[in-house]
Each structure stands twice: as structure tokens, then as C-alpha cells.
Image (tube, rainbow, N blue to C red):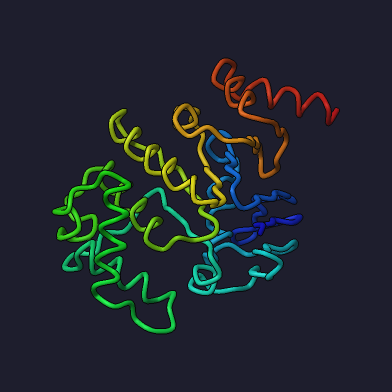
Length: 250
């Protein structure tokens, strides 16, 4: 099973942001997409989940051969694609548990039975080391950055998608929260799920070690390699990549 991005061109209003992106994530693989701010990483994330503000002018998004390029966000979710956002929404009056149950039911033909839901929720909270009291709180209301991310990782565990896109999941986290989120992602990696981790920091990759690293500059993937490529970025930053790209273009 694969998530394939083929020759993707995307624009917002009249400005093209992505200029022909190719990327394939197979089930069971973890990929990191890295790049400086403004390189097009979040545009790719939003396009993958069907944000209507982003227009695909060329190329395709395929999930196990099914063309999702024009699909609505809920269709993509039902097909097995999950997105963890940089700034998750707050929903006052809706508990974490109720939100998770609604999310699970949205992907099913028939609503999940209360007992079955409780058992799956309990198992995943144990896996992710989350306290039971957490799920009775209103979703993201008064949550710290780490708690918001933890709620998203719990949602990922409950929905059990085939592929997960994590957009700047490490943004604004202190070291303890980063470790909690990373431990959760690593626990879920063992279930043969494909991950695309989008980040401009290398620090999360110290905890969640990818097999493949892709560097995006100015809306194009310009370098690809293994985890050692992230180590090189840690040492040198992004400027050497820009210089290499400029030199090869001249």
C-alpha cells in the first residue's frame, strides 16, 4: 500500500507554491520532509488533506492507487489518510472522549458500541501513557502545547489510518512534551503505518528516526537520502543546500 504524490503543482490565488513534487511513502515507512520556513512544506500538507484554498493545477495524489486529488477531506480520511495539524482546533463543550467517538464513527458504516469504544480507548491510552482523566476534558480547551499534540496522537491511534501526515508536530513543544509525542509516534510506527513527518527542525528526528529524508526548497524537493541527511542539516543548516541547487542550475 502506498501514498503517492506525482508531479504535484499547487497554487494559492495566482501564485504557484509547489512546482512538481514527487514523493512516495509505502506502508511501514517513515519519511521526513524538511525545509526552511516558506519552502512549501505546509502547502503540501494542506493539499494532501484537501484544503480548498490550495488549487492543484497539475499532478495527482494517490492512496493505494485511488486518486484523491479532488476528494473532500472526509473522503480522504475514510480512505485512510490522517493529518495532525500544527495548530489543532479547540472545541469547547466537547470532551476528548466524545470527540474521538465521533471521529471513529465518521469512518464506520455503523456506530461503534460503547463497550468496544471504551476498550479500544483504554488500550491506546495505556500504549501512549495517557491518564484516564485526560479524556473527560474539553478538546484542547486550556491545553498546553504538549497536551494538544498528545490529543492528536491519541486521535491517530483511535482512527488507525494507513498513512499519517504530521505537520510541524514538534512546533512549540518543550523537551518533555516532545519526548511524549515522539514516544507515541514510535509506538504507533510498530503497527505497519506509513508516516510523513513535516518539520524544519531536526530535533524530533532524534527521537523518531526516519528511513528517508527529503529536503524541500522553494516548492521543489531538491535532495533525498537517509537519516544521515538530517544529521547533515543539523550540522550545516539549509544554506549549503541552497548553494548546491543554485550551482547545479547555473
